[in-house]
Length: 353
Image (tube, rainbow, N blue to C red; front, side, top):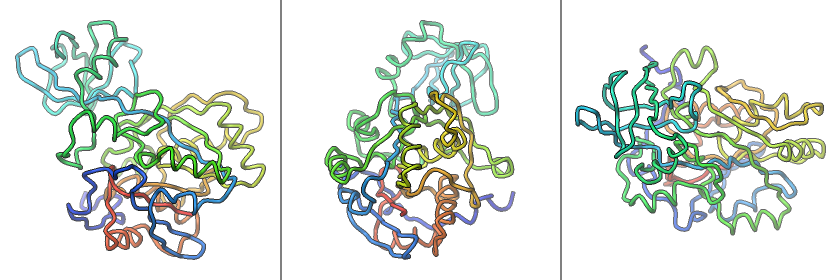
């Protein structure tokens, strides 16, 4: 393949523009506001987010938490292999858990984390399926004790110890910890920001998407043709569904915080808008949002600045086009880079209204 399928979302970025340290405090991150109706760009700080949002709107956030899923296994030959346990996918029906490793391993052999044994049961593409030879309920505790925070490899070495990393690569409102990456658009929120939102009667609701490799995996031609990414589990409670329907009925704007929240909402738009459906939504999504996508739920998007040629950039460009933007995303990124914004997981924030 001569050209990457998302080559239109390529842009040059230097190491100096990659956020290697989170803002301190969190809400001191810079905020890039783009108004699609007026074509105006404003630069501010995240703690002033509420100034740019409509009063009495509804903000929807992803409440997943990150589990320290990167581990170093010892092979039964004595060698070491690094693995990323995809805890977001859960234990499979055959008792195995999918894992990505950085070296060749052989089905039928054993891997160890200290005294805990895993049998390598099978391989499927880049995924290996490991069967814990112990009470699987202990796995989260084992990961917390022996694992490390799975920040994306493209960030390189970070000048933070594991204790600080676990705190800062986690939202302040995280609940069930199953994700192998943080919903990074939410990392900037603080209680000060939440209080300012409440002062404008901006309601909050939560959805769950446990982030796996689908959000960050290399995009293939097949992904583009099928409009599908790797499957990730999602859930939306009845109370959140009711808040969304009420907002729609009352013509109040819905603010999606992050690409995971907006994928969750848009993948379930049909049920969210079906007044006859009155139960929790517990399912999965492999939705790949590309330009031309018809957004039905979200009116405003808060997001970070993403890696070139990624599915995340395609999603944000699709949102800009949905809002009839006069500029494309690469053009906005150019302005942000010239304005010394920090990009990627520990970078600054963008608001599209």
